[in-house]
Image (cartoon, rainbow, N blue to C red; front, top):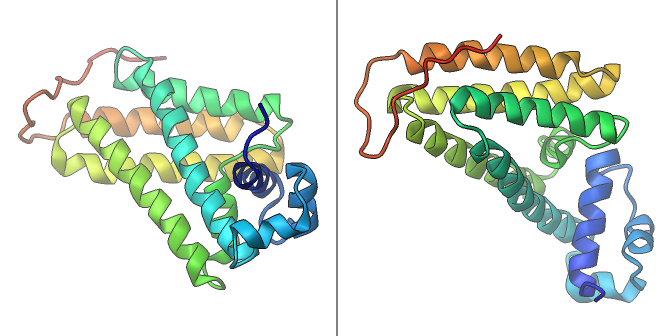
Length: 208
């Protein structure tokens, strides 16, 4: 069954923004990929490209939060989760010839100083991701005092690795970021502090 027009527009915009950014993506290209008539854009998004872009950013945020969460939860411990997330990102880059990366970061770099509506949308997604990662870290046994800074470091290393890997067309930055995150995870897990009920003690397993 064909997806509703509004959904197709959002999905098309999300893919194009992820691969080529906001400025390089025109309305005609989005409509062509979505197989939608021109009139449908303003019917579903009266605010035009900006409104569609905001919807695509939020939808992409939901999708990637679910995707990464599934990869994270598939591992037996926190170090395994970090390996799975970063190695999975490296595999995605290779499979797409370095075309697919984080759609939120791609747009955020373009609009942070020029488009307040879209800056807010990207900030909302990053904040939601930060909250989700922080919660998972605490559940894995990282003390609350260390969980938030570690979450921000993980996301910064992942997003930076995407940028460097795409520019150089090599997964080396992603693997380097992974190894740095493992060092940070081990350090944060050793920080003294109370754990909330249900938190697990951090794994002592080391990964070469």
